[in-house]
Image (cartoon, rainbow, N blue to C red; front, side, top):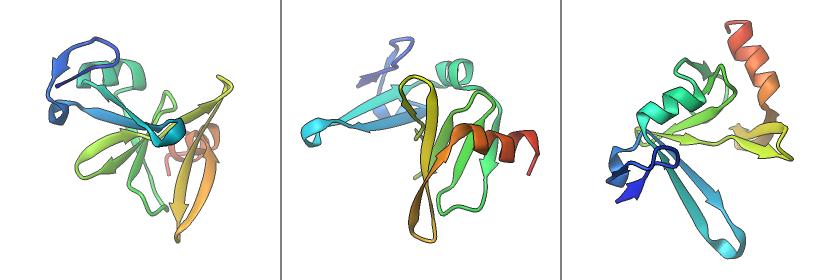
Length: 112
């Protein structure tokens, strides 16, 4: 059993809508879970596909990037110094750091 990070609802891990995994120091992995209602109200309910990369990803109008793995959504957005948000995307087996604002301009505002 796990609980939602925002509303504190307790459910089995498989029933959550969005997941996150954070690598901590000394190899520990911290897992986070978010229910569908909290995900829609906090991260946005309108998602746009990010094309041209090896992963299957979507971006919301609020600037959150999620990756779809094994029929689950994983939040892959990183924030540094509480202002600059970025994400790591792979293309042709090369890992690239992309800023959220540039992804929003390319995939949301231009409609590509």
